[in-house]
Image 1 (cartoon, rainbow over the protein chains, first blue to last red):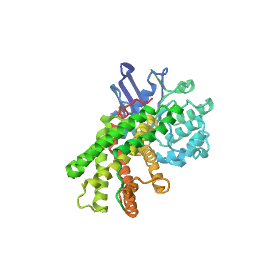
Image 2 (image 1 turned 180 degrees about the vertical axis):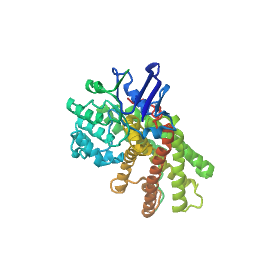
Image 3 (image 1 turned 90 degrees about the vertical axis):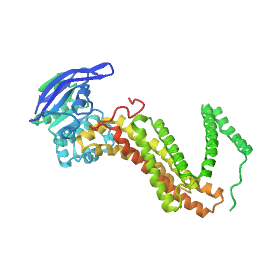
Image 4 (image 1 turned 60 degrees about the vertical axis):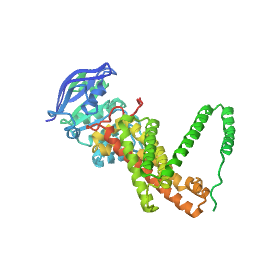
Length: 197
Length: 266
């Protein structure tokens, strides 16, 4: 059973307090959304969970293991992470999949579930729409088969139909823990837990 | 072959008159480069005159310690110019860059002066100083492009780095696309320049050798050697700078250390 816990997280940038005394516990299989107006630290909290930003105070633990330099490699091997606005150096999805050592067959299966054709993998990123690119990236990280997904605005470029298809796929994976930031009312309405900032 | 015709100081001063043509052009087009051109040329004249005096002294002494100290000064000036021009933080990257500069010069000079030219005394100032200078001057230009592309690329595009770090196979794999891009950007122009050497670019060392009274055949052999030395020196220096720079540009959790860039990137 995977468990993600945050204890007394505090982040300040200069004199500005971004996050103050954030505490939560997320059980395996829960779909969780971090919400709040822009600038409240949603992305920062997700980056803390991914071990990218060190909190000024408090700690994050995965399965009881605190995230630190001794445990970082092991914890990151359980996480798949999709930040916003990844500017890709790779030409297309296939090249990116090779960089991440992703099994193409598995990626194609998920692509189809997200109503994208296999060809999308080989199309230059510049030729894909925002929604297609987002679905392609999600299918790649889902192919990693990691037990915990950290998603920063996974539906920002998706229309309602695509959002529903994505949710069906993600909620269908009952054992998968998902921690996301989202402005989508539909996405948030189905989440097991909302962390309001 | 006779030695080069000497240029008198009066003739050299007379040569400055040629600048009137480009300066008139700058004035006509309102380019706004007149002041910086005059400052640059004044600096160049003063620096080279001072260096000539110092070089005459160290050429006379021909002392290994003095010659090495001069090359070390060239390395330090190159490193700090690189850091300044590429917007990188001295505190984070100065030491790795100095180590890379020293290492690349030791490898390339030892190879070419010791094993190719087979000098009995590798610190011979007539060879050691100009060849090291040519390597370091070129390495600085390529390092400015390459290190700026690498570190600024990493900081500006850190979402991609963390995407690759967490979803991929660790830091080595995550930084690789950034390294590839930086090395290509820095070294591609030199590869292009090498491929047209003698056709559209004028080889500086060869010209110097011919003016100095050497035969074209000897001049060409020296030119080929210096091209190889520059290519090897620049490549080794850049790759080592990235490799050693990475030790201080990341923390122990493979996060990009704050303050790698001197200027904040939006």
